Image 1 (cartoon, rainbow, N blue to C red):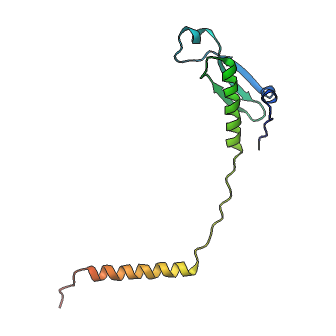
Image 2 (image 1 turned 90 degrees about the vertical axis):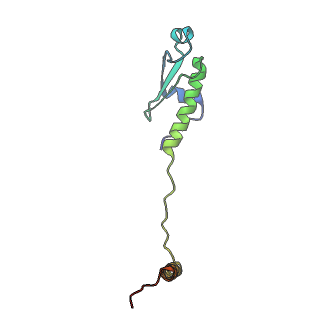
Image 3 (image 1 turned 60 degrees about the vertical axis):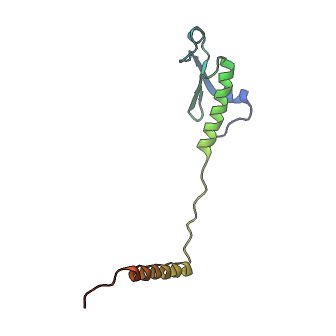
Length: 115
């Protein structure tokens, strides 16, 4: 189980921050500024990137949100499934219904002409 600090500043201290030029549309602005951010959380090894916004600061905030969500998903453990037995009465009713259906289908068939 991975435990993250509550404040963003402490979380940033635990991370390696790398900035790079983002790809995609945006023209000259995208080609000149290093606004994309990659965060690597060193204790857990989780890596997240963001290059949605024009601002490096905003991308860093988005990365922190993504990191928290990703670690939360990694920490999630589904509840153990407890198998239950089918009661004997239910089994009996099922078999009775099956026999009744079989009988109805048999009666629906054409009578044989072998006499």
